[in-house]
Each structure stands twice: as structure tokens, then as C-alpha cells.
Length: 139
Ligand code: AMP
Ligand code: ZN
Image 1: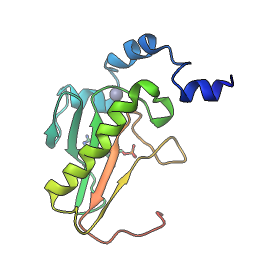
Image 2: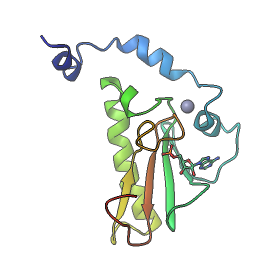
Image 3: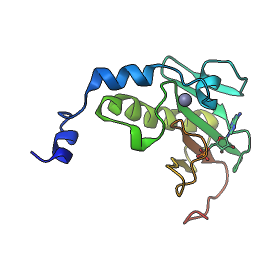
């Protein structure tokens, strides 16, 4: 079977090994330090799996960052074992939009990946942007 198909079926993922590495907070990671409350942030919501904070440099009237507590560097490093957290993240984003009062008019959920994607912090996070008409395409 091709490696790609194995990956999709979850057959090629050494789950325990990966989970162990991801469970350890990365000490020089800004978002690990924020979710561990070593560095203050404007916390909007938190639970066992996520922290939601206000972006320090907002690009829209509502600009939240939805951050899984677990350290995953980017979507490129996510695996089958992260399926649940990624699904929950999207549902949490919709709930946050509702609470922020922007669900009805619409909003955007953005994930920057790597250098060309504009990712500056190597800890997976999604931007929830709204409260104004957003332009498309970006840039
Ligand atoms: P990205 O460029 O997609 O990696 O997004 C990183 C985001 O984190 C940017 O929008 C920054 O403004 C934001 N940011 C950086 N430092 C902080 C901080 N200490 N608290 C809140 N947001 C931050
Ligand atoms: Zn981290």
C-alpha cells in the first residue's frame, strides 16, 4: 500500500511516540508559555484543550487567536492523532464567533502555515477575524 494511503487510514502513525513529544511544552515557544500562563495574555476563553486570546496586534475589530494547548508546530506537523482536536477547534471557532456577535454577518477563520503562508509563531493557531467587511483575496 502506498505510504500516503497508509497515512490517511492512520496505519503509518506511531501514535504513542508522537503524542509523547507533543505533550511536552516547548519552553521557547511563546504560545506554550501563554497557555501555561507563564506569559500574560488577554484570555477570552479556556478549557482543557484550548485557549482563546485577543491578538496583540488586531487586524479587525474582532481578532481572536484559537490556540490548542498541545504543541503542534503547524498543520504540516499534525497527524491522524490530532483529528479530534482539529475538529473541536473549528466548532469552538464557530461558538466564539457567536459569542463575539459576528456569526450572523460573517467572519473568517485563517490558519497560516510556514514561511510563505505568513506564519510567525510556530505553534498551531487559527485567527478568527470579523466585525468588518473583509477583503478577498488576502494581501
Ligand atoms: P501568525 O503570523 O499566523 O503566526 O500569527 C501570529 C499572531 O500572533 C499575530 O497576529 C500576532 O499579532 C500575534 N501575537 C504575537 N504575540 C502575541 C502575544 N503576546 N499575545 C497575543 N497575540 C500575539
Ligand atoms: Zn508551543
